[in-house]
Length: 425
Ligand SMILES: [Zn+2]
Image 1 (cartoon, protein in one colour):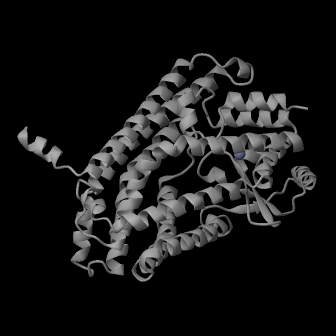
Image 2 (spheres, helix red, strand yellow):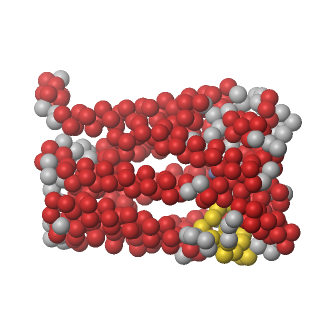
Image 3 (cartoon, helix red, strand yellow):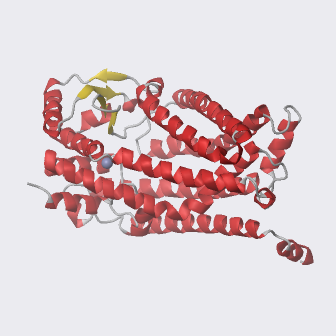
């Protein structure tokens, strides 16, 4: 035992901090999942009084089983993620990848840096793959949601990889170039690049890239169209078109969203939503989405994200010059690319405990959007739509309160619906 004792004593303080944060994050995640499964199972045999007569016991039990299955898989993913992070850092994985690429490319050069970062992304995706396959073809299939074939799944994966490469490689190159050329303030230029890049992706994703995955057709139902146009006029919105997206190609989960900037917005409804909800309910769901736009939720969230990324890049700008940062995380090679990849895989361990704040902020926006919908459409229609969506998506009505506070971007069903009922006119 002397050996491990000595090893512990010689451990760098930052190694100890990192391991403690990794252990804490992993344990909290697993604990929240256990609580969630326990709470959902304990409430499995009775539909909450608020939903009695609106959701059948069988649907409620299906939601409980679906939630438990997804959460259990999530626990395995948490463990795999922690093991992978340890493997990359103290396990020597990043150093090994760097050494391998040094045999082909000049150490510290652009090609070496990009190869290192791309290979880390590939290893992470390969570890994720069995989980994604299990989720889609076992869990989603068992509960009747999956409509993807293996061929479509892998075609999507190839397209996502191509899209990832198209976006990631130029961005990484820009960062490495700025780090090499811009001196001590490189992080500020990197931040400006990141902001510009995010805005371009925000614009291109829904207008261009999404067409690689889905087809859009103009909404044909004239009755529904005139109802939606009535809502838009009432809210003072102009739209560049109403479209239906073939979401049913992959899954029976439904959704609606807006894309575009300024006055010219496209409104997109999933075909699954159109086929399942009555026209007034669709209008109420759209009124909620319009609320997010009208109350500038997207811009507020982006502003916060940009502020956070400025702080994070400033921190990286400082850490990159600290020898202990590399040594304490199991890395000998100091290079710009190594600092980037090391930093970005380690940061989530330290920001995990901020999750509840981000979730709370998002839930406040959901309440605001619901209130907007209640003002511009019928609250009762939104309630009916939500009940159908909860049922169709087998979303649990009885989440564990702590799990929900930590992760949920949307308020729990009961809270959301009871608040809407007080706003009913
Ligand atoms: Zn919303």
